[in-house]
Length: 130
Image (spheres, rainbow, N blue to C red):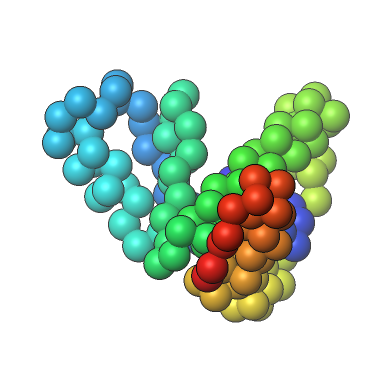
């Protein structure tokens, strides 16, 4: 996915992709996805969807919500320029790499998810302790 915003920098060089191989009913497909994911925080499964991973539930959820939002923004931008990716300004690699150091690390995912979890806890009147 092209890096086109500060939020997208959290995924700089940290997204894998994989072809869709069907529903994961046996270990082979799951193993293939795990190998394709490697040590990255997210994977886009062609014609299927997104998966994210992190060292905490909070960060995993935050990465998923963020990546889903970024995909929607990216598709909207592509539609606005008639599918011509060259018309979408991308963040320079050195800027994306530097921003990743702040936004792409596990503690940032956890910290950024905290308000979301607090709001859910308040709305459901359930305690949330992190």
